[in-house]
Length: 198
Length: 107
Image (tube, rainbow over all chains, first blue to last red):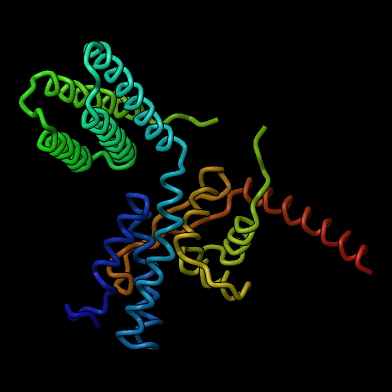
């Protein structure tokens, strides 16, 4: 028995397994299968502590193929790659514009690093967002990812030596809008319905 | 052209489904494979393979009724479709031909 008195497996492990599994009935079936073996066979045979170790080992071994199959699935992978490519193109386009505008003065190192980190943040946001949008269309994923992006941008401004310069606000604001727009476009591609893969 | 070649683990899972007939759900498939092969298998690997076979049209799934020993969760039963039986037969025959030839080479 666990601390809650019910003969269920560790709640955290169950939650992790449910998260790793594909959404819908399949996730519940997977959790139910492990739960059944745990309650009927493992717990009476091994006792509480060892059976909880067994439960965790099952979750750890199952999570890898489950997550792997979700990521590798073609539509999601395509969405993630589109997000990364779009963010990269957006980044280099914006960076070229900045270089053009600032041609008369050398580009500061912090700006180069800042732009790179912004591109990584936007690419990561888009990748995460599109992954969520194609798999679990709930508002929490995009909100979380948008929060991470905005925090990254805010941190960059805080660290930069010229945080009050309007040009950088416009630049990073543009990147944020670009990222959100591209992410939304990829998300809309999903809502056109499942594609009949040949 | 539709691909009918199966991987080794797909063959094992399909064979377990055929053996278990109408009692084929995740944990039963896992136990059947472990008992037959003697190798530990994770439930995640079973479901990943079943999902792939389902997409190929070799397997279909239906939800059962919730039960208390599963914490009120339903079982997901799997059935091998005609295309799955055909693909399994082809793969097994290929393996049999290959191993027969191999045995003749060893003799």
